[in-house]
Image (cartoon, rainbow, N blue to C red):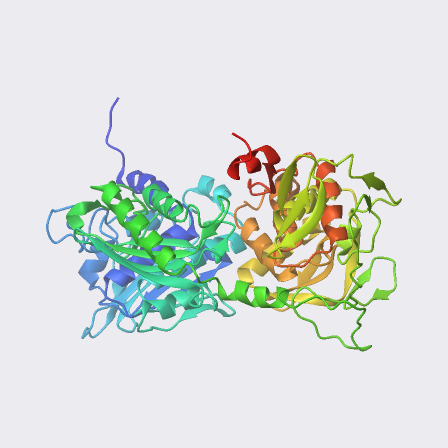
Length: 610
């Protein structure tokens, strides 16, 4: 028998579509405050919003009559006419407040400008009381307690308080980017978590949200086509992330997720970055209302474009133009590292004075497990080697990771019996090894090759007590409080990879022990990349099930870098180890580690063969 459902059950069904977690309810309430012309919005959350959260604004407020209507389904002030294709507000469906009130305990207190008193309205599990007088400043406060108490089956889908808080912060950060003129704050019952004062430029707000290095590593972007305007900022190809978490897309002030736009960004960066890398982008599209439908998703996180091809074309052309015009720029953090790598190796033994503890870059003193302190500032002398008819593999090397590649006994090889990758002859641009094989010339990308070898060694030692070394001076890595939490929650699992770290304050971690293979690595980059990688995983995902991702991040920064001078001994040791590794033909990103130029093909280039 067909029947009309009770109004409260209808609201609970709507809540299932609109309110997935505290963060989604928070988004609806903040958008309502923005629509009310608020210039200051304060949020408070307890227990990640599961037990309590509130949103207070200084907007236009509501009368007692408007309060009663606000919690009725499909009641809204944001559709002055019946044109669903001319929407100029964020919250226009009139579902948010009644949906939240149907599954939680809600109290709304509001006072319009010039009103003598405020009014308060309570709704519990969908049952509304009458408004009553209250004390309140101009504006509105919505308090939500015990979310999903009326639908307990939904409670089991909520995550930890920390995970729910991180989701709420992400929502607030995105809205804060879109509305820099509005001051936002987020606090709990103990402290201020986020505080964004109003600013006069979008760049200042975005820089405050993403981080202090943002504005130095991005390119402003501007474009327009057929009434559509594009603005924002795109990251330099060297300013990338392991996930798409720092890609922010806005359409008419609305933060959205759209496969067309994501695909356009990836296509625009094709050829500039690897397929596993994600650029940092913050893009704002202003589109005529008739060209976009924002009414395709209950939570209003998706839109439908009338002509998606022209949107994609505008993004791709604008991004690629900006990248080509700034092709000589690299991220400032990479530039510092490049300057450090450019310091030549001094061809003699050199040690820092005893007791000297300052360090920079990848040079750090350490304690090998079960051994005495070793001074990492000692640089071995480069051996002089003239390669003629024989080659001895056993030589002293500059990098301990490469030392591990050397066989324990000297091996003599004849030029008549070339190994597969030949003998190293020289190094070009401190990046490429040139090797002579029996009937070819081989060009090796030293970083890509060593990265693959380091990765294979790491992945084979996980869970088997990898050899580690304790740092004499712990490496302190600055990060966000959320990233510190992610890493500290995984500290025991990271020990299986040879990484021992603990929390150092609220926004730092201290790395105390590392795998021996990473003794020359840039630990700051490793830890930051690991944090970005962990953002992709749910709380229940075990790192050992994601062993490849974790080892790949560690191997990338634990390998011989491009720009480092190698001796012939080191180059040949790398070639020999590549020959023993069955997957050494490509790096962990899928790119080739070496190319082979056959003599026959070279002779054709010079007209020696037909």
